[in-house]
Amino acid sequence: MISLHRAGDRHPGGDPAAGIETRHAFSFGSHYDPDNLRFGALIACNEERLAPGAGFDEHPHSHTEIITWVVEGELTHRDSTGHATAVRPGDLQHLSAAAGVRHVERNDGETPLTFLQMWLTPLTPGGEPSYGVVRGPGPGAGVADVEPGPGAGSGTGVDTDGGAGHGAGAASVSYAVPAAGAVLHVHRPGAGERVALPDAPFVYVHLVRGRLALPSPPTGPAGLTAGPSGEEIGPGDAVRIAGEKGLELAAATAGEVLVWEMAG
Picture 1 (spheres, rainbow, N blue to C red):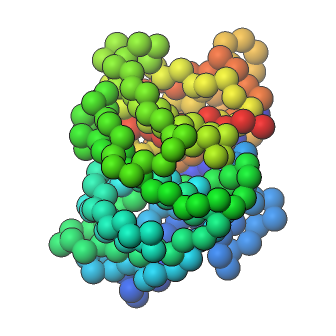
Picture 2: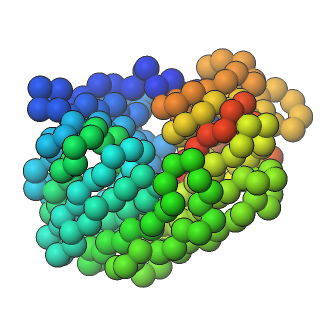
């Protein structure tokens, strides 16, 4: 199964009057869709846009693995475990809420902030909260030099790949979230390059920048539920893949794509 979900189909949320605009990929808050509660371990994929000075005041989380990818601007994070961090473009932030944590997220900068926040359910609830940041070189560059940030939670890991298996010159980084049985792969292919997708029970693709062609199996029909094989996707579009193997993404232009590999 391969299904296409366009950026324009996301459910709008947030508080525009307060400078907060959100687009939800799944049921979230007051928006309830019983047919769109989760995909694999992923229960939220929110595109957040915060105007300068806007943000989310202190609020609680529990039993959730929260991964944040900053697209532009700078995110200020503070939490009840004592962490205070500025997260910038290309940085990956991981907050493991475990039995309970409170945090604040704000745009304390002078320019708009855009980030993608993804929530996953842990395999086992409870435990102690943890926090970590993987520092990246920013958009438009390779990510082969990414290193774990201070305070990275135990059991997480970063692997880098300067291009092998993903097209000449492509850069990628993989970040494991073992608490949820998932791995996030970040790829920045150049125009004409291809990205091999993992053979996993659940694969979730979110395009941040550029344009990519939808994947097709090596042989036989693609089984798409929306759109023909090879149709292009743009920024904010997502693809959900279940039970398929041997798939690749073809980059029509240079881009940045997040790929979740999740167990059954």
